[in-house]
Every structure is written in C-alpha cells, then in structure tokens.
Image 1 (cartoon, helix red, strand yellow):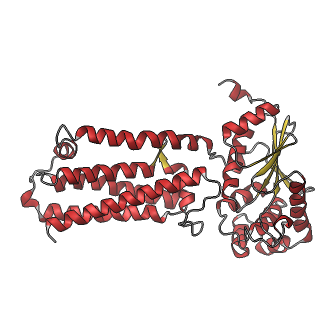
Image 2: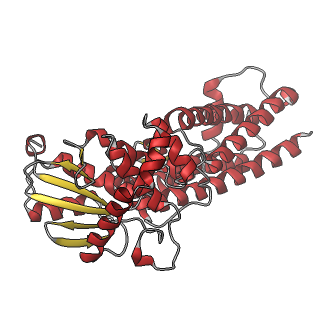
Image 3: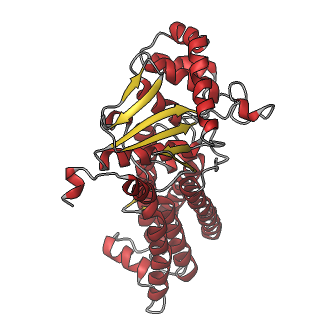
Length: 392
C-alpha cells in the first residue's frame, strides 16, 4: 500500500466519520426535543442510541459528544487538504488519531459499564478512529524515510495547527461555529432532563388500597395527577421533570395513574393497535407496588420500554426480587386488570387522550412541559419553594 492509497483511505474514513457524527447529533437532538421520536438504532435495552443520547455522558460541559466528533473530523480534513506535503504529515496525524482512539475506548467503556447500552452509530465512529490510527501508525514506520526521524510532540502539534497564518482563522471559525451553537441548544436540554431516580422522590410510596403510586408532600397545596404509559419515550423524561419539581417545592404531591395506549385494556383505542405491551407494563407496575417496589418498577419499565413482553417482564420481576411465578399470576388477576382500567376511565373523564396527560389542582394539561414551564404552573397553583430553593 503506497502513500497515496493510505492518504485517500484515511480521507474517506474522515468523511464517513463526519457523516456518522452529524447523524448522531441529529439523533441526540430528536431524542431530547421530539416526544414521538424513536431512533432506527434502538433495537433493545442493550443496543439503544436513545438510551446513550439520554445519558449524562452524551455531552461534555454542555456540548454534545457528537459535536466534538464533528469538530475533530473537520479539523483533520482541513489539515489533510492543506498540509499533505508537510514533512511531519503522518506523525502529526498519528498524534491526533491516538487521541481519537483513546477517546473512543473511553466512551465505549462508559457505554458498557455506566450506561449499560451501546449505540451502533457511536461504534461506527470508534471503528473509523481505530482503523485510521492503525493505518497512519503503519504509514509512519513504512514511510519513515520521508518523515523527520526525531519525534517531537511540540513540533507535531505545531505542524497540525500552524500550517500558515491564513489557515489559523479557518480553524478558529470552525471551532466556534460547531461548539457555540451546540452548547446553546443542548445545554438547555441537559439542564431540564432530570437524572434523579425514583428513590429520591420525597416519601415515595404506593397506596395498596387504591393501587396508585404516590410521591411528594403529605400536606399538599398542589396535587399533580399524572396519566402515563411505559412505552411512551416522552413520559419517562417528563416524569424526571416532575421529580425535580417535587424536590424543588415542599407542598407538591404526585398521584401517578396508568394510561397505557394499548387496545388490550384501553377502551379509547378501539381496534387501533399502538403500544403492544403497555397494558402488561401497567399491570406489572401495580403488582410490584403490592411488594412496595412500585417506583423501582416504574423506572425499570421506562428504561426498557421497547422490551415489555411477558418474558422480559419476568426477568424484571426477578431483578426486583419478586417471584416470577407470583408476578405472572398477579398480572392476570382481575384486581390488577380492573385497577388499570379504573385509572384509564378516570383519565378519560378528565379529557386525557394521549400521554403524558395530567391534572394540576383540577386543571387538565397534555404533553411534556419543560422544568421551567412546569415550575411556573406549580407556582401559579400555589407551590411553595423548599428552604434550600428559597436561599438561592
């Protein structure tokens, strides 16, 4: 393989990496701002682009990792176009592909250990980076007679950025053009998406008599009755927003009811099929509530919304240390089925026709509000900030 072949292979790989990164940024944006969006790369709970995009690791200081990838590929492409005759061309590329490769390993490990899900497009960029690194590494050794023998980190960085005075402004413009808009758009989304877990709900409990989840203040001035669906991607995010509100105010109470958009238990849908396993998810949550594990079950179901068939539900029961045999019997019991249908009827009475639907002090709302919007509604309804928030 000669120098020209290596050059064009790496150049094409950079274009491929740039294209994948742009698509990843589109996925990241849609996951955070489109309530009905489901990426084509969501296959299950272990291979899910939306799960990765929704995690706290999808950005660095408010800038999406995808934007940083776009920036990196653009800078390398400019360097390859403007400096291919440089004496330190391959050794300079090697230094930056080494950084790309280390970054790829880092994010792969984070995805496996922290997020417990992989994004196929992210893996695509990792492969691009690793192949490019290996090709350039071999090129440094193969074409070493054309390169300066002494490796100098300072000279390699200078070679990459200091091609000529005229190129430096181009680098600066690209850096600002990519990072600034990304930060402005995505930092807002990251601030509004709660990373709180159900265990951080104030007084989170389950009313076994009425078979509903309750959280928040025992002496509420504001009561939110939420109708939600475990297969609804936006419901999970909105419930995270409600968690933040409960922790911000000291007199807000949440009553969570089931409204699965599944015609097996929801009379609203008639013959229409929408969410295939949402009814079973609702039955499962109420059964888990009888074991004092409602909120844990709710989080588990939301994070695995594409895998709510009966077999997977039995796996989740085992994770919650509930007998799968007991859970299967509970899911089919008339008591639980009637409890879910009762929630649905209550929702229909107050005008719920989709999820999330909710009632705040008697006034009906639909669609997921941002943390700022929901806080404003709660304040107008009589919400009182807790002591910690008052001191801010």
